[in-house]
Image (tube, rainbow, N blue to C red; front, side, top):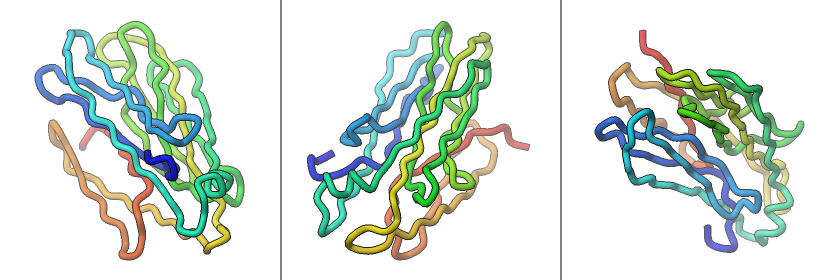
Length: 191
């Protein structure tokens, strides 16, 4: 991010060619100046590129330090499991504006399957695949106090889903007048 911005969201893409690569991390650094992403191949070596994205926020009339004082990050670590899951929730009165995940894997690996807002919390999931491998997953919830010195924050969450395919994707639009701060997704079996 440019030095006067706060990172509030981000994402990543990894290779879907050949055996493919899957995401294992997409979360803010402690200073909220960068978005950290990671991916891995699975069972068979697959050198690949990883593309990261960061979404920044700057509020006219506020310095970075002033804005940073209104933003908090909650971090929750799951229990160890083959299919770990957890959620992070902002402090009472704060508005969820983003989130992320980090899979704490060892061995063959555990792969992310969900990172999305739901019911005021940021939910995350991962799973082993074919080869058993327990791991933990970390959920990050990025929130802001709604009453800024320059105005009040209003937030909305829109969602939608794709049809089952081998490489699904879906576009979700925001209402007019809103700016995107973070996006998420949840991969599940079709049916």
